[in-house]
Length: 134
Image (cartoon, rainbow, N blue to C red; front, top):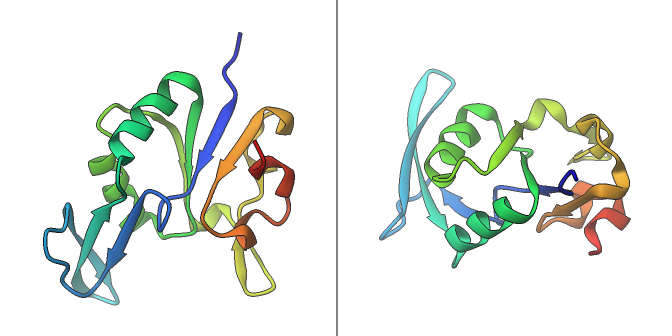
């Protein structure tokens, strides 16, 4: 039996990030922007390790973020100690619609009735609001 798919957002769902120094940052990730390296300070959300480990047992987990891969991929590498994410989708996989980056779950190629999305921003899943209710 195939597991249901849990689509998980990165920023403000699993982590909080800032270009300004954050005391006790969990990670500091160098990101190149316009030829200059910037340090991004990343704080993990409380209990994120336990959440990812448990969800990885129960679901096929997919990271889907509106962030750029050059930032989100290294953060996901540091965050995902258990190789929970079976796939990673970034900004280029989103649809730009009415000023927002929308996560079109059809792009996953899976049965929509077997997908749930966990995201802090309702605007990002406006194409599939029922998938956020579980």
